[in-house]
Image (cartoon, rainbow, N blue to C red; front, side):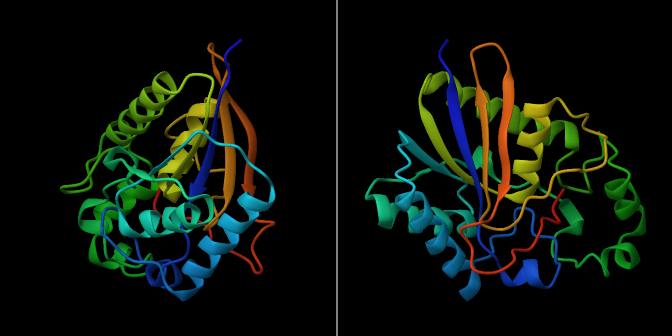
Length: 214
């Protein structure tokens, strides 16, 4: 049996996370706390003697900056992959969760209801997002069979990976927390996906914010 393991990392904190502002594809940098979380994460991985074969990151800055802390500790390159981006939330991007119901009531209703084919007015439907993430995971698995892959991405993307690993329905209410700078493990034994461990933040010195971009 050739098991491929993924260690999934959500990026560190941003100012938009603090403001509860929907980011999607908007390219927001880490804030000071986010940079500190990234370094705590990288040092914890180093201390654990984790052996991984390759490091991938979303090409958005908040993920790439988180990956860079790992690069500094392990002295290996991070491979940027645009398929690992957060879901594009269309017109909702840039709005806080308090502003969105007032500014875009119909879009917000569709978002909260998890309407699977709604493209969020120029964004990405849940079905489209699911296919992108599933295809990206499968491509990496096939490329690195039997290896350990470290992957830095986003809260909504990691929630989708959780759904893939647990076979949770796309329209089901989210049940998994995805805190900033958390460590999350899934694996594939050549037959099916498996959830190994989720939402580990024991390496952080304070509580981390959960995900909003679903």
